Amino acid sequence: MSKERFYRLSDQLREFARERDWEQFHSPKNLSMALIAECAELVEHFQWLGETEAYQLPPEKKEAVAMEAADVLIYLLRFAERLDIDLLDAVERKIAINAKRYPKDKVYGDARRASEYEE
Image (cartoon, rainbow, N blue to C red; front, top):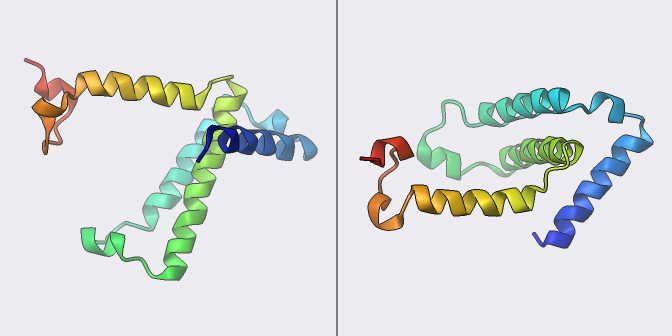
């Protein structure tokens, strides 16, 4: 997704909320709670599936998963917008932090937490 498309989407969501007078409900607290609820709905689709099954969703299930993932992104974008957080900038900064915390030559093929690598 291009940066332009990303920011256009955020603008579109803000306008959607304003047209419905929903900004009053879109506090960081409320949006973070809605976000975790949508994450839980996404997880439900994978509960009890094996690793292989999780990659081989039937079309109708994949569409339902796509809609839940969209809900997660919508609430995350609204949350960031309400707190004036530039998510793309934050992601770039976080990738740089993670590159230092998890040097590829030290962690390759190993999924431990960063604190477990530190000596």
